[in-house]
Amino acid sequence: MDPDLDQCATIALRDMIKLPGEMTNLTKEDAYTLCSVAADLRVTQTVNGSKGMHIMLKKSRLRTVN
Image 1 (cartoon, rainbow, N blue to C red):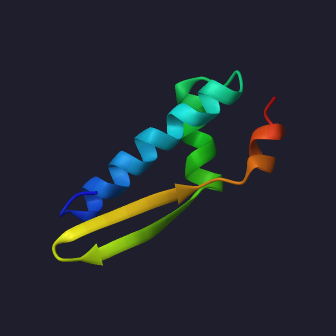
Image 2: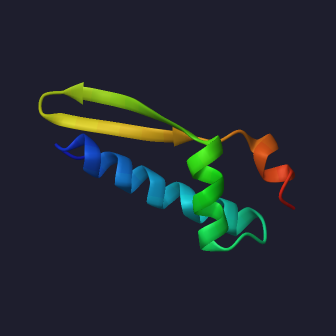
């Protein structure tokens, strides 16, 4: 959550990059690449000055990198 959607996207992406690294043997750089081509960024909230975004990555994408 942040008033700036760009900042929301940055926060969501940074959090998502950690997940493949924890679940697989991907480096941070490889996880970033995976997210950039396979993840979807979605706006969650845009009310009262608060904005939120979340990023989604299919679990099946993680199985292909194990």
